Image 1 (cartoon, rainbow, N blue to C red):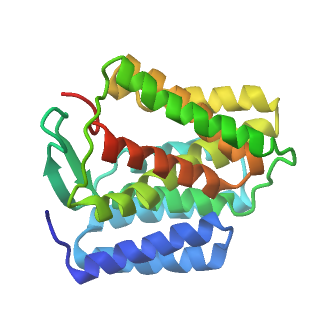
Image 2: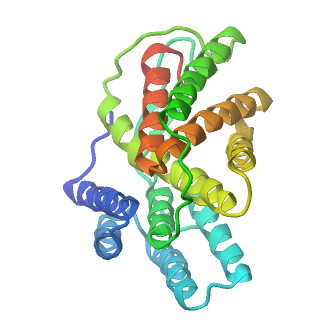
Length: 273
């Protein structure tokens, strides 16, 4: 397993603190953490000069939306965030912490700490700090149904041969948990639940918003194949129900993290070879 220098760890630690603060609607600490983290990331080589330009441009666009909240500007902003999240913008050297097969019959896997995806998630959450929340809550029964749906997804995935039972305790579990919490689960739930689903619920019925956000979540996983997309869509319904139960982002984040952790510890990860 790869090790990281202290300056790099500090940059990611501040990024995680910023993500946590912004997810709790603490805007000023989030911006302070973002700027400080970016400075440390530049010093550590994770953020390179060209990446500074990309990051500054998207951050400036985020601030510009406060004064000019025009639809066309929002579309450009969302496209820029997605470009960051999928590593399409240059100037980021995301460290590789582990690579190989999690179990003998699993597909190859590489564990990255994706600074650009975390940076995009933090900018998204900073913009959402002032966003209104739907008043209607579906209640804890919806959360229970969502949790059952997630277990159902694992069962379906095993039944159709996408994954198989393969219990393990990887040596790289801790860095995986940190990455999956802050750079995967939090960022994705911020976009699909606190972003897309919340925005749609303010304009349409909760069920339609839930299904649309879940389908988009599934489409985001299309690179893994049609079956992977279908499973991700079902998982998105589970996360969406858990989010809608109390309108609390971290409920969906923890559900996402728990689902991925069960997948890693008990089944082939990410899927059968």
